[in-house]
Length: 455
Image 1: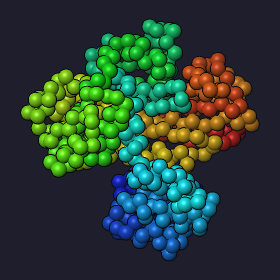
Image 2: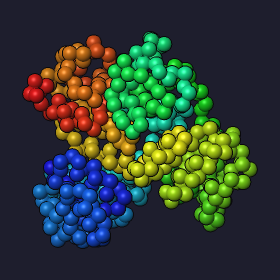
Image 3: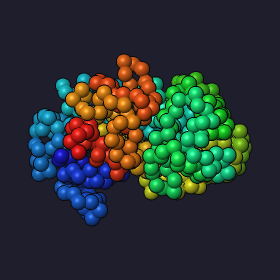
Image 4: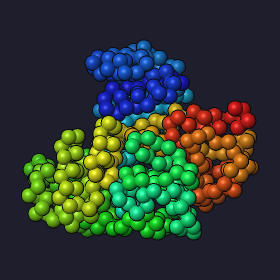
């Protein structure tokens, strides 16, 4: 598979790293030689220095033989032109482009086949806002992802001193036998595994569980965690994702939302755009401001500042001063475990979420979606369509030879979503959600692509 990545910034570099580990032939285009050298030193890839929106540079990168073209520069216009040229030179290639301007995203004729040939526009900021909104709706969650229409994958971090410390998963299930949940993944000290019933739980673990939305509050009781809905929300940072979140919360009817912005003029402009969001001008790291605004009564504090280090400081400060839950944004994957270990309740990485969009197209088999999760995306939820030619069809799950580190966590059939057990059977046409660690994914791809008996 030949993948051309246009743009070696944060998102482009992250996508390059992810694709390089997928045994793909990756070519990166950028104007900055220092960025290209950094990627060459780190990964086994080719690079071309120049603008990805020029035919000559794209030809030098081998666009005519490309399977996927990803344009993720900081310029929407460059990304769209690059996709348009790729559409003419490699009509069968998948074109993915980072688009920030909402008016482009709202008019499909501009980006589609009759326009710039963008097959899949991606906007990391919008995807991150979606993820944060989902986390806000589940008060016990460190992470939330949608599995189909009617299931949630919920990350639950057990606090130190949890009453569940030392219990096995089988013992946990025995406490609520009628509650239909399935533990898919456990993250402990940076190691991601698919646990079995005899595996135990410890304080500091993050357990990822598939659950029906109507059972979320019951699950909180099982884990002996308080269910405190997010009524009072404070957002630090009025640019990008922060402003987008505030608009979403206002549109959803959330009445008690505060937005803190340091820049005076920006704060004034924001205040004029909201009816039910209180905009405060000041530093989100200012302890006196947070105490004055009753940070101890805050249900959720969201750190969405553009500067990484300041953002981390704002999150830690809010938690120290008494905010019940703190969600922090970061684009530095190395920061995620550090921030979590410092006591922050949830960490969202726009960069990691953008990678998920790309993995969807790079995966083998009839893949419909890929959701990276866990410690810096070390596990994936992969949705694929079950084909009637597969040996996976028609047999109880307990009789299938799934590789270590993988589990079927959900089935979608005729509009119904099923959390399966060992007696459930995959039927032709089912949408199957497989939860797998990185090590297990190549074997899962074989299972998706060929009969199980093949290997």
